[in-house]
Image 1: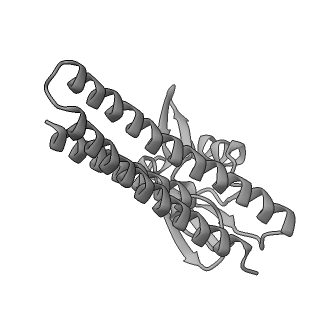
Image 2 (image 1 turned 30 degrees about the horizontal axis):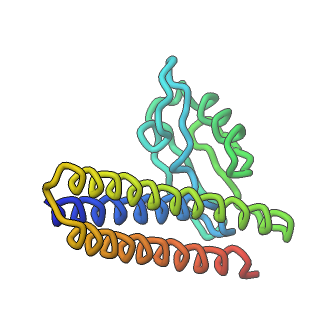
Image 3 (image 1 turned 45 degrees about the vertical axis):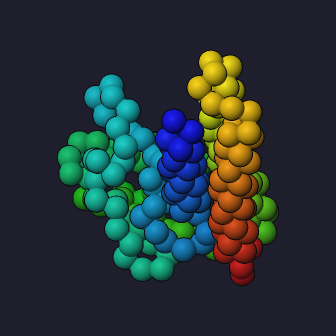
Amino acid sequence: MIEELLSDADERMKKTVDSTKGEFSSVRTGRATPHLLDRITVDYYGAMTPLAQMANVATTDARTLTVTPYDKSVMASIEKAILESDVGLTPSNDGNVIRLNIPDLTEERRKELVKVIHGVAEDGRIAVRNVRRDVMADLRELKKDGETGADDEHRAETSLQNLTDEAIREIDSLLKGKEEEILEV
């Protein structure tokens, strides 16, 4: 039972790290990448729909993204969603395609983005610690119910803490790499 709990905790922590990595990829670094628009949702006839399900997002060069909607009638909604998002890009519409030119990042914008990624990293760390807290509670419950001994519980808690430390180290490493990428001129 303890092994199942630790295995589940490890899996959930890895998913959290992967999710944090995905969030990092959607933060702008001065280069055009379709992942910049991953978090954008568009009001599509009353339903909030991810942009990726409504349009093809492509990189035409190092500084330009193109958004080609599958349904031309939602171009205005897509433009509005991009303008209202936190990506800081202004769409240009030619009737068929929406173009997004990625300007060079100012020093001020770089510092704002560093704050954003620090927040994303902290959210990831909190999620990892929440997994640890849940599994610790389960371990204490097993001990209280008499299904395991104090020594086994202590060993499991130590293993769980090691998993937690490893996941947080990985998030911190991702954060450091992304921060360097953003601050690179």
